[in-house]
Image: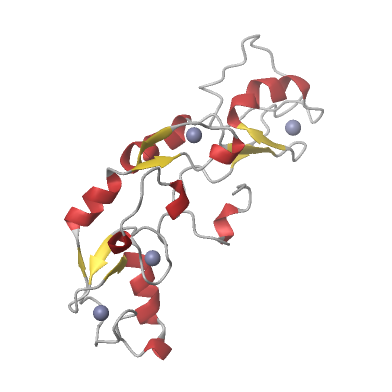
Length: 186
Ligand SMILES: [Zn+2]
Ligand SMILES: [Zn+2]
Ligand SMILES: [Zn+2]
Ligand SMILES: [Zn+2]
C-alpha cells in the first residue's frame, strides 16, 4: 500500500501515484510494459488469479517476478517531505519520508494505550499518566528508558510493570481503512 497523498507537503506528480491503491508509490516497481506500482500492490494483484496475470494499468501480460525495482523513483519519493502521521494528534514535524522513519522513534504524539486502564494518550504524556493512572504501577516497556521515573519510586505490589502497548509505532503508509490503523485519527 502506498503513502497517503495528503501527507505530502508538495504537489505529487501523477506518475508517482500507484494505479492500484491510489497512494504514492511504496517500494516502486516497474512492469515490462512500463507501468509502476507499489511492490506490495502489484504482488497482491498478481496473486489474485482473477486478474489473470495482467498489468493493472494496461492489461499486458505480467508474471510474478517480471517487475523490477525502480531505484530512482524510490529515492525521489524518500526525499519528499511529509507531515508526521500523527499530525492530527498534534505533531507538527515535517520531514523527508526518509527521516520520518527515525522520527517515529521519538515522536511524542504516537498513541500509547495503557494496559492498566485502557486509556489511549500521546507518548509525551506517559510520565503524567504514570502519576495519575488508577490502575497504578504503570511502566512502559519501550518508554521506560526514555522517561525514567524521576522519583525512582515504584507503585503497587508484585510485578510493578504494566505493559503499555505502543500502537502503530513505525507504520508510515496511510491506506484508508487499513486494519493496522485502529488508533489513528485521520
Ligand atoms: Zn499501491
Ligand atoms: Zn502495463
Ligand atoms: Zn511526529
Ligand atoms: Zn492507565
